[in-house]
Image (cartoon, rainbow, N blue to C red):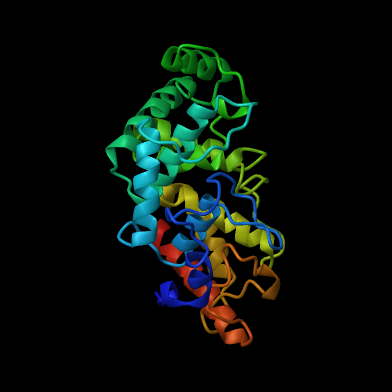
Amino acid sequence: MSDYKAGKWAKQILDSRDDEGMWGTFHTLSQSVGNRVITTEQAIRRLRILGFTKEDEPIRLVLDRMCLCVSGRKKIDHYYEKTHDWALFEKLMLSAWIRIFEPENEIAVDVARQWGRIAQKAFSSGQYNRDDDIAAFTLQFGRKPKSGFETGFGMFYHAALLKGILPPATESLLLDYYLSRSGGIYYIYDKCLNVLPEVFASKKTSWYLAAIELLAGYGQAQEKLGFVVEWLDSKKDENGQWDLGAAVKDGVYFPLSDSWRKQDYRIADCTERITNLLRQIVK
């Protein structure tokens, strides 16, 4: 992997940190528009794509802050949404991000196990059952769910949080659920993942790959995602490389290289991303 950590895109993000090593409020994964201030969540997602890990000081600072928040010792920021049980949502969201960078972190694993118990009950009939989900949520948290994120496991955060937590039978059902779900994975891709994008060189494909990258970390990914591997293999050019086209540049997943003025740099970036994904799936 190239050293994108030393590139201009990383520098732009790092130069915009505040005195605590954060970026404005924490939450939102929506793509930044124009001069809108980047959120901490957007920043750490982009830094991860550029190769940053828990060993890098900018990520370590945010991880430490997230752990303090999940354990109730410090606020992540002063933002909240009235339509949710915000404290519960924050624990889910922050624990998911902690596990993305540090899968064995016990603070986040404890939260993951709570949601894992709910998932086991929700899929205990052999498929997702909303009534079982509600019953398990109520038993776990002492009240019935009252907002959308509290049932259905449909968000990026659930998928990121539950890797390595579920018994094999439940994991298999969960992956089938994600692949067949008409709304995809909320925050990442809003179409059924079993249906491949019609146009390969497109932003839609980049977003589709983001959802597959999320599922690729599960133990049964190779079995479940074989159709994606075959599709990607069929899209290689005569040099064994991939090109998603110039329009795929979105400031989130691409670019990786400092410049796409040369087509070769774009192809190299696309090829690196897809090669890394295939390595995750085919082990």
